[in-house]
Amino acid sequence: MAVSVRDVAERAGVSLGTVSNVLNRPDKVSAATLERVRAAIDDLGFVRNDVARTLRAGRSNTIGLVVLDAGNPFFTDLARGAQERAAEEGLNVLLGDSGDDPEREQSYLDLFEEQRVRGVLISPMGDVGERLRRLRASGTAAVFVDRSGADLAFSAVFVDDVQGGRIAVEHLLETGRRRIAFVGGPLGLQQVADRWQGARAAVASVADASIELLETAALTVEQGREVAAALLARPADERPDAVFAANDLLAIGLLQGVVMLGTLRVPEDLALIGYDDIDFASAAVVPLSSVRQPSREIGRTAVDLLLRAADGDEEPRRIEFEPTLVARRSTQA
Ligand code: RIB
Image (cartoon, rainbow, N blue to C red):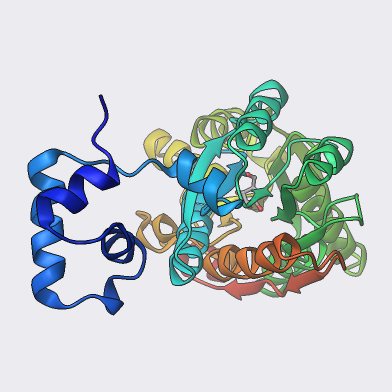
């Protein structure tokens, strides 16, 4: 039989209301009473029942967050920003990793709907607009993070990835590189397609510059290493003199591949720039240039928009952050 709030109140010799205050508004309780009630909670092994509390209160204190790849520090930084902001409102964040798998993405949306979470933040795999409409109809708000989201019915917080791609390649061109390779994929991912679009736009404005697309199956370190091996297998006069990788994980894999194979030097023979500016970029064996996304601010801002929507403000808002160049050794002229 689970220990109840009433058991805790009797053990501590206080009212039910006092136990509720200790759990929800400890600042309203004296230090002595706090200590007595918390001792009773520990002695009895009381665990609050958030589902029951949600039913009583009519709304959850939990937010669901679905990301594409929890192994990518960009998303863990975004999640930290969301958790920080949520905690300021006494809320928690449950993290779901879709792992670039649409079915897993759907199962997390189903789970968060069943849990009646306060709302859902999602960096979607594909077109989830219809699913999010059903979620909203059953009382769960939703906000896109890291994508402008084709569905304008929902708020979105994102970075202008076309501008980001342009910034990355303009920087390579300014350092004198002319044979650029864009490494990233799948192109079905909006973030990748936008960066590729920006990269092409930058090259189009320089007469003697060229760009080639090396599409990858995913945005991972492993994929980056595979591309490095393929580039190094080329005759010297068929190799690019610079690579723009669609995110830092790819760039780190490329850097590993080039350094391990040892026949090319970064940046002397091959300049390299990534995207996101995760912590590992500056810590790489050759400090990696990147295009910074304000990941924690994206997470914080997305929670703000979600709480507005959960409070009935149906007006969708789109908040776009500007990407910024972070130039390091891997692209030095
Ligand atoms: O997961 C795909 C990529 O898109 C991440 O590296 C980050 O750049 C996001 O915007």
